Length: 494
Image 1 (cartoon, helix red, strand yellow):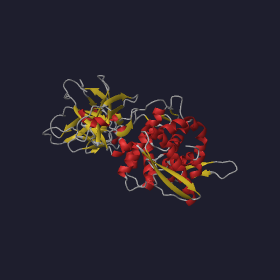
Image 2 (image 1 turned 90 degrees about the vertical axis):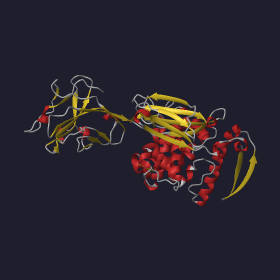
Image 3 (image 1 turned 135 degrees about the vertical axis):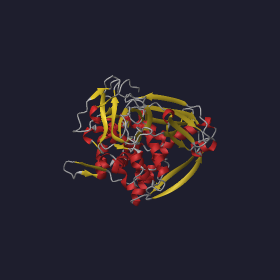
Image 4 (image 1 turned 90 degrees about the horizontal axis):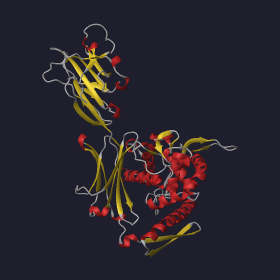
């Protein structure tokens, strides 16, 4: 922003007496005028250097950094830093900058941990050891919000394999592109939107066939003018391609006799659409039989995957909720029992969405009990939502799955299949992230890590060990509570 005039505290150049009150005034024509602002850009969360050095200067006696806000000829000044007589005058500093500045030897200012609200024009005035005061140096700071990029695999109604890239929470508006392994930009269907908070969301959708079998595919979201970008890549393996016999099913039927299982394998050639309808029934039958066997043995293998892509939720160890649930004429419920009581209280409302949950679980190959458990913990099956569909106690989180609008472009209505599909797809991406970054963890710990990321973010969870996952989640129990609720919902037809 170019200013027609510059303002500063007259007290800066006083050589005796205590600092005067910060009273901005208009610079007279005889006083030195500021040049056009120096443009500086940075991503939110980083440190940035605001330059204020003058060629040939022999050091300074005093320096003042202020932020100029507003377009008027007499804007208000926010004092960022005042340095005089060898020390910083901390009392002059605005509260928002306390502990966030560092003065360099040449008078430049390092601003620590910048935030979007730090965007604006800053001015610097120095009193040199020799010569008159320098004319102001203006610095225009642009703080860009950069967000995580997510990729997922989907199938169209006509069974075409699609790659979807999504990212939200950017400012200014970013560009999105999908590229093949050679860096060629693919002809993708792209969308961009801006939310009420001023943050942008973008998406790109491409048919895998357009990539010519290239793998991995790369999604890049960038702000070219600022040189800022984030990207993610997705490997397309043979598991995703269901042509020919790969689109047929090896049907495994389990027969339970007493406490032992007899397994018979029959190869059945079936159309792909029939396989999709049978998958859910096969999964639930297999999970039920294996659960019965595990109960006879008292404990089953923790990371047994069965036919579900992300592991059988019933084998994931959990400590349950940290809450204490009072019960009449009984001992108060804690841990697993508390989670079960909380889930039980949501069952009547949850049954309203049962068919939808099964449809999404079947399509995305995620246990319906796990989806129900997340909905139970996040929104009490909708009972904890306001009339607008947002959380009654969290105005930024939307719908049954409580998707935060600051980080995702919310889709569909608060109780819609599109909304729940978005939340489950996001969880799948987090599970894949945990599998990629924590390959030595058990399937159960990878799942709980994804749940912790779902509520607290990858940046807080990935540095942790498997036994620390809930240390950064609400109430310190989100992952364990969701898993315990899923155990209970699996006994209720989910």
